[in-house]
View 1 (cartoon, rainbow, N blue to C red):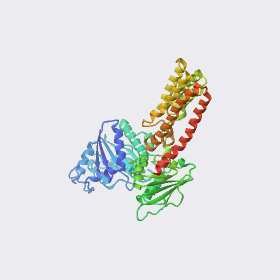
View 2: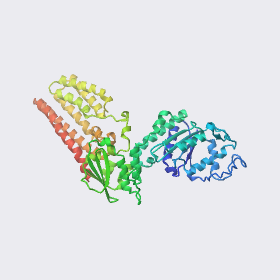
View 3: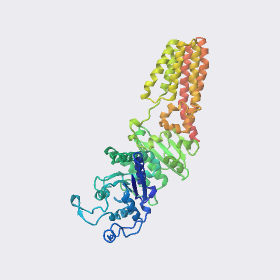
Length: 540
C-alpha cells in the first residue's frame, strides 16, 4: 500500500501530531505491507493559489505556479492512502496546509454539478475513487466539541462525510512532555491498535474510536498543567506574568496538577524542594486531598528534597533513574523517607483510575514461602510422621494459590525441597535430628544463595510496598534487601547448627521456642532497618 503522509505541522519532526501519525503507521505495518512517505509541508515551497484558474483553462490539470506542489500533486494522485497529519490552528488547519489544500484545484474539472444537501460540486479530473484518507489532528484544548466542527465540515465537503477516518486528540500538547510518557504512551498504543484495525478492515471500529476520543487527563487536571506552563494562576481569567513563566515554579505546578487525591487519603504532609542550581525553595502542602504549591519554606517540612532542578526534571522525564541518582548522591532527602517512597503514587503521570484490574500486578506474600517450612518444623520435633505429612500437604496445596498471588521462584524451590525432605522422613532410615538440620540448611541456602543474584530473596516480597516489580530497578532498595536477606540466611544457618544439639538433649520445646522467638526479633529489626537504612543513605 502506497501511503502519502502530509505532515502539516510547522514544528516538522517535533510535531506532537506526527507522533500519532507514526504510531498509526506502525500499527498498519503489523497488518499490511506499506510504503509510506512523509512530506514536511512547512519545509516545502508552496505558494498560495492565485485564483487564476489557468489549471482549468490554459493548462488543464497543470498549475502555472512552478514550486514543490507540482511534485506533491503527482505523489498525491498515486497514493492509495493519504494521511493528513496536522495540529488544529484557530479551529482549522495551519496556513501552509491550507495553501496545499487550495492547490489541489487542478485535480478537479471546472464544471459545476449539483451536490448533496442543495450544494454544488466540481467533478474529479482523475479517478481517485479508490483512494482513502485518514485525518489525524491534535489540539491544545481539552475537548473535541466546539473545536473540530469547522475542520470536520471542511473534510466532509471535500471527501464526503463518512468517506474518511479521523483521529482527533485534544490535550495534544502533552505529547511534548516526556515526564508524561506513562500516559501519552498508553494513547500512542491505542493509536497503533487503530492503525492495525484500519489496515485489516479499512476502518476504525466504534469501540476503538470511542477510546480515542477520551481525554488524556480529566479537564481539571489538564487545565492546571496547561496554565502552570504559562504561569497563569487561575483558569478563569488569571493574568499571565509579564516576565514569562518561571521554569522551576511552572514545573512544580505541573507536578501538583498530577496529584492523585485518592493516593493521599488521610495524608497531611509538607514536601519541600530546595533547588540548588536555581537557588529557590518551594513547598507542596498536602492536606485534605489537595496539593498546594507555595514559594519559600514557611512551614516545617515533613520531607525535604535537596536537588538541582535539572536533575529532578531529568528524573521526571525518564532520562535519569531516580533511585540510581539518589544512590549516586545527585540529590538528598531529609525527614520522613516514607513520603519520598510514595511520590510515584502521589504524582504518577499515568491515570490511576484507568488501571484495569487485569493489568494490576499480582502481589507476593512471604507467608506462602514460609508455610510449607513452618508446617514441617512445627510438628517434626514431636512426630516424624506428622511433620512429614504436614510438609507434603502444605507443599502440594501451595500451587493452588497461584491464581491469587504471584509465586516467586523461592516458593517453587521451597515446595520441592520440603517435598523431598518430607519424603525422606517417611522412607529414609535416617534420624529425625539430621534431617531437621538438613531442612534448616536448605532453607538457609535459599536466602544466602539469593544474595549473589540480581534480586535477593526478601526483595520479592517487600517490593509490593515500593511500586511492585519497578522496585527491582532501585539500587538502594536492592542493597537494603541484600543486607536483610544475608541476615536471615545467617539466622537459619545458626538454627541448623543448634537444632541437632537441642534434639539430642530432648530440648524440642526449647528448639520450637527459639525458632519462633529468633525470627520474631529479626522481623522487628527488619521492619526498622528497612526504613532506617534507605533514609540514612538518602541524607547523604
